[in-house]
Figure 1 (tube, rainbow, N blue to C red):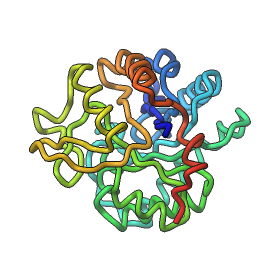
Figure 2 (cartoon, rainbow, N blue to C red; figure 1 turned 135 degrees about the horizontal axis):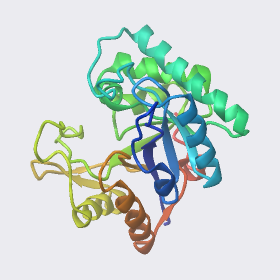
Figure 3 (tube, rainbow, N blue to C red; figure 1 turned 90 degrees about the vertical axis):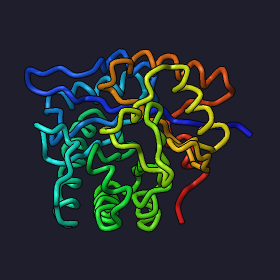
Figure 4 (cartoon, one colour; figure 1 turned 180 degrees about the horizontal axis):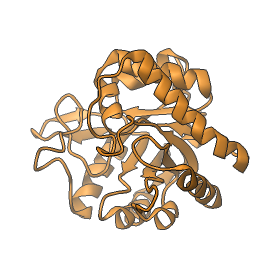
Length: 263
């Protein structure tokens, strides 16, 4: 049986005079791009440029909505109501869809950013608000969420296609949540360890947690963080290593459509 995997990366996070990441170089090695929509990072010109780059390299384009928190890069929790979460997600998807209409290309997926993503993994109300927003604005888009999380369950409940996301450079707790960045071993630093971690999740459907527990996990898409100092190297080598291991690297839409995750 052929194993398929999508490689996604958070891009378009520059804004104003501030440049972050190496978007054009990374775009050559990924299959889907999560484009910041102006709340945690990004601005109109950056969004437009990043959409054009993704079209140039035939990369699936996703909205990457986050909390309205430029100073904290969207990685600080905010106490928003479910309605507020719904509204900020609708607003940000809509902003990106304007540029997609100009480019004549569809929205491939939606992936929440940072603290919003992590909260939606565990908080059913936040997960429901995000899923409802995607279903209302772009029901054909795939909802990306932490593998096996509340966000994946909410997406399925609202009739969306979902992609279970795993992280190449992050360690996991026993409940399959990501280790807090406050912990010294939250980030996996070297490529050899990253690929061992990735191949185990993709080919065996298993992750070794921080406490050395082996737990089942579903991997549809792998995240590479665009702001990681080794992001470009990871993206290039990962695509090559996965192909050598017999894994087909392609956009989530190419295989999730056929193996529908709708319930």
